[in-house]
Image (cartoon, rainbow, N blue to C red; front, side, top):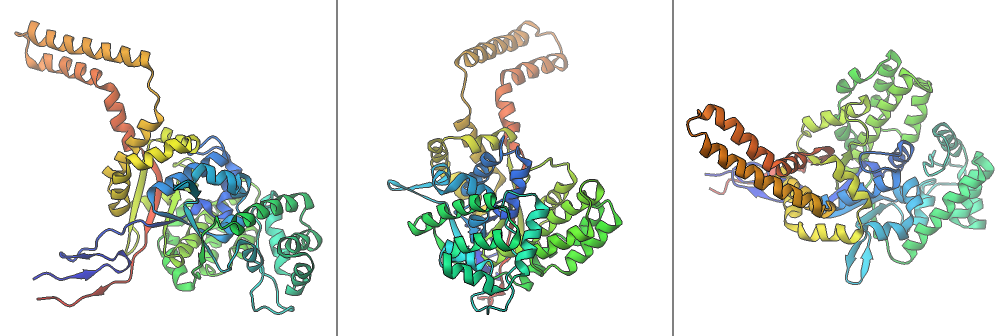
Length: 471
């Protein structure tokens, strides 16, 4: 007799009672969050590229390869500094998927409004708010200003009445009304606000032209927060902090995890006001941790899996948490590792779109296998396809390698024949060295395909229910 089990959202029944691997259909990417885009912009060069823009393109292409759809929220579009700099037209040229004679974006946008322009307004005020209500304290990460100034502007917004915004929107329209509010009442520099407004206009036009897929957003809730934060427990974080104030701040953030992110970030600056040194390091560690947990909760709400990339030095204290996530499987779900050669990660950001499309097509079976099972062997097959597409063989070097291999084969045959009286314990190392030398290129490729940790994917656990035993 076999017990049957239903795998919830995974949607597959296993005869032995084990749950089938969840297929990766939709990915929610930590680095596409507006705050994370700002971080990528600030650090510049990453393992994914020599500059912030090529890094974000590489990550989007990799997410496109790993899943069937990339899930974004509307604020990633209207408040993402790198999405603004690249713009919708160039973004489409770099990462668009061909459909017939057209290109389409590989993502769907989750929004609590029907359009990107309406989402701008929704970020600041509730639809049913009255004139005397307060606006949301929204921190505009797309404003090209230092972090403390962005946080302060967000706090000033939260101190204003809804009627101040409504009056300007009624007179000037949504984007102009918000821009004037930021300049006139929040002290935001006009040049930076107008630059952000120009980017809004480009993405709003793309939306009006029907190029963006917008679907209703799921609401983050306290239950989702609790599940998301449970995957990165506070107890694991304490050893990463250098100061007593940092450990107290960590406890406060965990206890207040349901608060708005702008509120959390502002309070962290109160707890840890240092500009550099141990306090600043602790604040950064806590922010990385909180942001990942916060976005994991958002991913749950959008019914997507969460992927987080290793951007900095894997040995740095800020990245230790991600390395721990690699080793600790998600409670009730699974954790998948994405391992790729470091040199290949940078190639993704600059690879011509036509080459990337060819890689997707030629490796479609391996890609489907990875999405279905997370098999590391499938990822190595994909990596090999990318290596083939990115490597440009040198004919001169190829001829030299071929000649060297032939000479080594002849040497091995000579040693085996001419030194017949020599013990194998002596001949074997010589022959083995000759074989290894003749296959050195293949050996290097073998180890390159094992790669380094490039990202960690948390696969959600689905609701499960036991079905009656059919016997």
